[in-house]
Length: 224
Image (cartoon, rainbow, N blue to C red; front, side):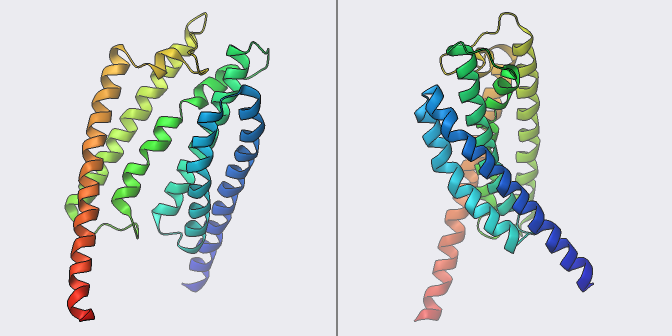
């Protein structure tokens, strides 16, 4: 039993190191791309959120591979770095007029901003140890996963349709106008899912508040 467990830990550590290294590569690419495109605002957001998430994610994933929070933080950091790099690159190509390859791929990757940030909803639910003892909250997590899959599918369809249109419709920040400004069927799905996710996040925050109040209340008699 010890050898398989050690092998599993070694594999988890390797994955954590690989994802952390990937985050560093995209982070390194962020600096010149942000400066060249002149989009400092989004770059600062990606750095301000992504760097702490990547650092926490690597540490937690290596030390507690069974804790999903570490992998979630790594996923958030990667999404933000990749989205920022894609947005800067597409702005460089489509708004500044530089003829470079992989422009459509950059446009698609730029849309990872929303899926990356939405993962914070499940981080709120699983904080601090990544475990759910209540059946109700496990069902809430399943609801989140279902909504997240719907969101990803809607984004994939909207991106594919937007990339198929000629000429490409690019907004002021170098993204796909049809995706960054949701309308039609995509807009309806996006806004419904967003409202439901906001409702879930509010419930998850209430759960955290109640949990911490109960834990502090139970600690007071013991301390006295």
